[in-house]
Image (cartoon, rainbow, N blue to C red; front, side):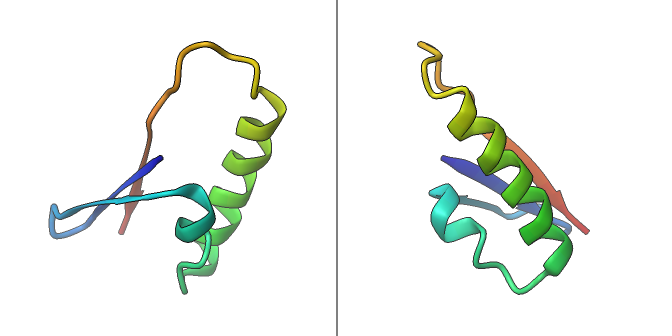
Length: 55
């Protein structure tokens, strides 16, 4: 699960696969990198919620 906090302070929760469809290319690149890191570390027992700030 990815929590996206926009500049106006609204919180949006997305699954990573949905979140990477954002039109903001910088965000797609950032989330793509996060997705690669998350998938490589799948065997972790704790699920960390990612928080991304969009300006």
